[in-house]
Length: 434
Image 1 (cartoon, rainbow, N blue to C red):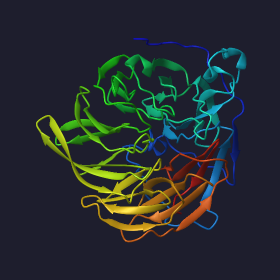
Image 2 (cartoon, one colour):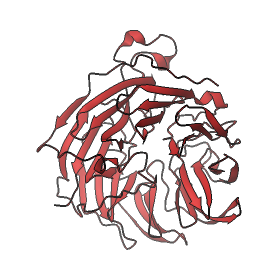
Image 3 (cartoon, helix red, strand yellow):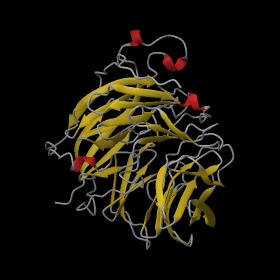
Image 4 (cartoon, rainbow, N blue to C red):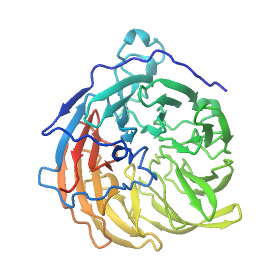
């Protein structure tokens, strides 16, 4: 084991710019600002706990409170905890002299930064934490979203460095490398947003041990699962069904489920496009697991059965009407709402029946809050609002944010605000009903 408990020098970046817009943002309590501590929200299901939000937007969109620019190239979403907002970006090292020569990922300009921003849009800290993935294509930006838990942040870098950091300062507490577990790194680098489960941090190195659990305080290994091929770009969910605690994640081959206490593989389900990327996070409701991917494959729904500590997963249906490369889907009251390539769809959870298909924001990501679907396109900064209903897709808000290139971030709605990340910009909007 190569456990690093260290306080190495970490560089600050002085390039981040915060731009207040219009009236000053009202201060938020720590409680108001803690409703999205990780990827996909409190329960990792893409659903906000907020209420009392706008049911439509004006033509120009909701009120922009502030924006932060020059964050670095990135696809990561924001997480919020302890009164601060966290995200990552890839940019030039703030002190190139401290970056060693050698591997291309270590050269100046190829660094992964993590940052904290307060509720007024002021940058509190911005830390150079690791080498960044530097593939020469459209996927060069940062990937995973930091996970906040009890004053600490947990982040897996694209190159497989998992670290624990002080949320108030960015100081590193410990690091581990996925290579220690015989990892099989994805072609376009790790994108998993790790999950905290009690005293454990859950990550998926792939390879010899597809999934591992580490002590969140020390970084020491608690359990390792068996093999299930290479890792992909998905993030795990915690499922409790009929008294059994499980962790479900996507893999190169399909879905894998392990026991949350031991890492024992409970079931697997092969379902994946050949030699392509699988990125969406699985979802669960009422005994059903749903997972959909892109590249023409579509989605699959499985029904779980529990016999003591034994769990089986039986295929119920498949669909070609939710085919999503990155944007995901949410389950609401027995219906799945998700991206279907260049359109959007609603599918009944238990039957697989397609309720509607419609145009939204091109390909994109989806989140839910207070009866509404928040859609965010992968290009042109297109953001839209629609009621969550199995009857039809009807946009009641539609605007664009400025930026360049593709986006892979998801909308975050918490504390009466909507956060939109577009490459090196973060926008904060007021979506609270007056």
